[in-house]
Length: 514
Ligand code: HEM
Image (cartoon, rainbow, N blue to C red; front, side, top):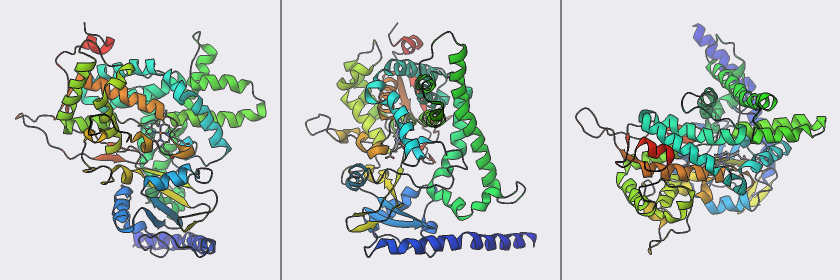
């Protein structure tokens, strides 16, 4: 009985608070459309739009099904938020690159601030804060500057494989620590411990507590019921508020702890600190006090976003476990070109085309960022469609990477697709779409590319990849599953990663055979 009254009140409150505002926004937006049509798409329900037909955890699956029916440009609506889903690379280039002045904003996501992402550069509105933050980021991670990070990446990759050698069961953690170490050293001159580092742990807690909530299709709940954030803790339905509070706490600590670590070292340490943050703290001192607050805000935003730098190595390991013949072919190439006396380094890259093809296929096969969103800052007309200001676009990268015309048998891992019939690497490099387009293109792509390549080449040179065995010695079969959020990576899977016969612990640490 009490529950019924509670639910009735809740529904009443929802109708009272949200429905009029949705209707108002929809009605207001209509005349702006002139007489031009919207792209085709599934028929939206009154008020709700297409909310009920979406797979909220993996919306790209729904978009793929819609793509088969409606084509490359699809209209959909979630409540009052209207989206155009772009499935083809040429439309993405036309809008996000050629008209980037207009399409570089991000949409409003109701869970951003509540879950501690308000400061993140990747979600920042297109404006002065984003511009400054991005400039700070760019100085450390641009193509030429990122070359200076390579010796450090080489050291860190060797640490990673040593850790996998010692403790193969925790391969996920070792891959994550490698990705984290590269960005944290560049940004804070902070070298995390290989295992159980407190700051890496904090960042991971933050990501786990919040990433899933950022999928716009999930954020709809909060947009529809904003009062959920204000319910008292004892009230049914307050779990979202409690989750958000926890994520925000992690986020604040994650932004502040490493930042203060740099400040303390600059004050107290005899050794000079060499990092993005220390560099800009020094510059900030020369600014007029009235400019410092905005600069510090942009610096914290750039620094804390860098960790989100994700890693494809889990996808690579999964592909090798499922396709051991591909790992063996790459190992033959490495043994022939690099030899067995040393480990690969960056200078070997051009001589290892099959390893390169594996890296391309890793990026294509399971894109780490399946959806990217841009918003129009002014109205436009494209292919006969009127696009009002504030209209959002989802650029659906999985549609491009799974395009059967371009990639036959796209769900399979086939590095050979990147070779010409004459056996040379072709010009199709998924890096051209995997890192995004236009002004919001991933600014960490040069560093990510180098980490990924050295990670893949070194693991192939050192490890044998196989399925785990059960007590009877049979292969353990499994169906890969994924952790979904704004990024997507494989969940842990059973596997056996063991050193190749000529590899010893000394080889891993020094890169040379003893
Ligand atoms: C394989 C690894 C990575 C992939 C696939 C990837 C992909 C992406 C994509 C698709 C975007 C959005 C682009 C757009 O809006 O059009 C993005 C944005 C971003 N990435 Fe990456 N990224 C990777 C690694 C990294 C790393 C290592 C860093 C940091 C060093 C980084 C920093 C950023 C930042 C700061 C943004 C936001 C840019 C903005 O909104 O202006 N990423 N990334």
